[in-house]
Image (cartoon, rainbow, N blue to C red):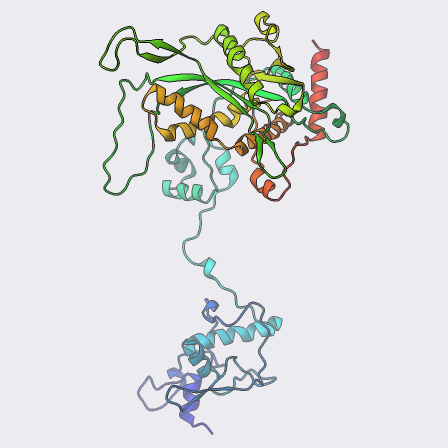
Length: 494
């Protein structure tokens, strides 16, 4: 039988008063007559209890574990209990302390909490309260932000003042994505006639026989988009990353406002063609052509001698220059790169409504639009709709990004950098842009021709990896019907 001193040690008594008597005042548990301390606020300290774990069997055998000195000691991996009793077996808390390397106080708190949970639900719920620790996040409602005028939330400091918060707190809200920064670009306005024209242009891309059931866009395999863009020799600001002690590079130019630039006309076909084995048979990139002239130098300078051939940009890009570019360079490039096995072809060349572009009824164009089994038809995209041209939608930006990585030094290097960037761009990028064009067309129909939509992100790469990326996108039937109804009403009132 255990001695009285051992019983006192088990129950938590000690002779703290120094009077040789272990009284209730010497017990560390306070007023709790059960002899165990209150439940811990951090029950996760006891790691071997899992969520909703059943109450352990109180009749389990005590394991004998050899000690380092060879003597050995008894160890119980589960807290044991006498059947139909709340009294622990003698030595259980001590064994738990040895097993889990916690204090008697912590083990007692966990056991006391477990008894209460057993009485309530006949199971243990030992869950961590770690998420309740630390500084609590500041909560800001949607209405408190939305009611602030746009002029009072153009920077973090102004928004913080309006919300009565600190600037750092607002910055944390941005990191938590409670508040999102956004740059508002100035979009072109639309009259009702422009909106109807935009709807009409998108509806014409839908195959007629699919409209009564599942409206689906045509394959667009015979479309070519053309557009012009200025490419600058360099940017005013260029971000680079340097080593710790690397000196700062210096860039200089004769003028920050007069950076050399060339205008290029780019032409891309609708969809690249892929073989069954995955190889690209036709990349869809027709070509990119600069509006430049090769002129001999009229006099000698420190940079070149007289008569040296120099590349100079065309001063005025007008219909004369555009017509010559399309007849002398664009048409031959299409005939050279188009897949030869497709027979006679009608190619639709889609362009924007710039004044420098010619129309299908141009007299000189009529002499050249039919050649070698090809028929080239010039069409215009809807007005004020840059997203309807894949070059403006994304392709030009991709070319420009690659071009600036090459950091050309001269205007001759600029032309070469643009050519190389155009050819290096992967055909899959062009294919994805054409797919984005169809999703953008859906947004145009949903917003009835307005420009107040956001560019859609449809996770094309994920859909392609899963084999669910469609060749032709379907459009909502309700959006098609509403746009057709609005267009018919507008035409009836004209």
